[in-house]
Amino acid sequence: MTASDWLHEQFDPTGSAIGFRVVRKLDQVQSPFQKIEIYESTDWGNVMLIDGAMMVTTRDNFLYHEMMSHPALFTHPDPKRVVIIGGGDCGTLREVLRHPGVETAVQCDIDEQVTRMAEKYFPELCESNGDPRAQILFDDGIAYMANCAPGSVDVVIVDSTDPVGPAEGLFNKAFFESCFRALRDDGILVQQSESPLALLDLIREMRAEMGKAGFTSFQTLPFPQPCYPTGWWSCTLARKSGGFDFREEDARAKAFETKYYSAAIHKGAQALPPFVARALDA
Amino acid sequence: MTASDWLHEQFDPTGSAIGFRVVRKLDQVQSPFQKIEIYESTDWGNVMLIDGAMMVTTRDNFLYHEMMSHPALFTHPDPKRVVIIGGGDCGTLREVLRHPGVETAVQCDIDEQVTRMAEKYFPELCESNGDPRAQILFDDGIAYMANCAPGSVDVVIVDSTDPVGPAEGLFNKAFFESCFRALRDDGILVQQSESPLALLDLIREMRAEMGKAGFTSFQTLPFPQPCYPTGWWSCTLARKSGGFDFREEDARAKAFETKYYSAAIHKGAQALPPFVARALDA
Image (cartoon, rainbow over all chains, first blue to last red; front, side):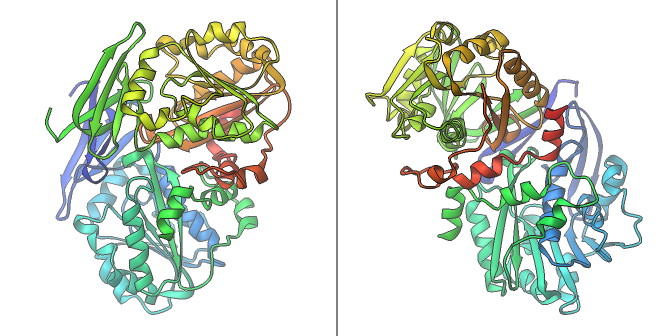
């Protein structure tokens, strides 16, 4: 491999590809669950792939991690107990722990190797792993949620890979029922929900499954994400009850820095493009 | 080429690539200015490339065309005379002509072949070309703007390729001075301004050149655009005087349909992510 090599991910479900110019492969491991590869790129820092799919780059992961955490945490009135299912790169955990009111944040990823690779190649994402409020488990997230004490969690963040392979079981009614039961009445479930342009059917089906599990209101927030197919991604929030007014004053007065998230960005993301709104209403 | 071929654009300035799964090449022409290719894709309709760069797909061009036109036209108090420099695929022209108050819309693209290819492979973009308010010229946009009568234009939209090759002269002070002179005092210049993640320096330099030409206020609006590098793009508005409050009530009450643009999306796009705001203020 030379300095001018390009690494592409060709994503069949959208018929589109993304890629980065890479300098060299830094590492590779075959875990019991998936193949994890790390490349050094010319412009995007390090890049992690899982089973050939781009997961994280040094340069653009802030978009995803900030949007998976702060909108939900500033919507919940007082989030104290947070559970992250997946999220082995620890970037979402870091963002969650920026909220001083959070008392415990459990991260449960099935694959320890993802975290080991993140510690080595994305150390900045792991900088809060030693926080006494953090609990890092390597276990089956489906079982973890099924065994959670009812009404014990404020926010569940499902920071998973695509709904194929190990993450398939994180997108159906049975899993969402476990989340529903584990959440307090004012709790919020957040799930990464793929591309709002190319995968609208998936978002609609996910919301339908959440509805069958008992959730009553949904909010899909789009955001840019260059390392994911189409460069445009989304998260979907679901509530047992209540709407999605957020603590705008608190978001504006937050004591920590963000690169993408702000109260104004949060508000702006709530305005769905007409074609997305029409498709999700249908 | 088989049904499973992938067409990639490797974009050196961002070190990132985009691609589409294609069925076959439909056409190719070498004009006096550039090479134009048309592919049929599996999921994105037809795809036009100019000198190897993705320009338009059937599926996602609405994002770009709506954002290049409606924010400026709903910011200007009463746009009657619009000039589009470039825009040979005619998609921006179509959006401009949706505004009933527009009396003339001149489209000046140097390359007639772009329009001929659009008529053939993107006929929906050309459906307003016969509108009596439309004037389609194949000429040098730099000369056109230099020769415009002073104070004769309400909105100039620069819908160009990247600032290399034929479009290089559309990103500097001399061209912006012609636009400044041609615009009425409440006029607005809009320029496509590349990726807000990966090409922030370019946006900052463009705004500096616009400032040297006399423009006093600027607004960069990001939007998703899967067929352009990083999947996240922007347009930049510049005014001779005045700010960027827009005719929100008119935008909300508009009598035409849009897929991406809405008053709420317009408002949301005005909230720049903190890292973009910081870079552009610097």
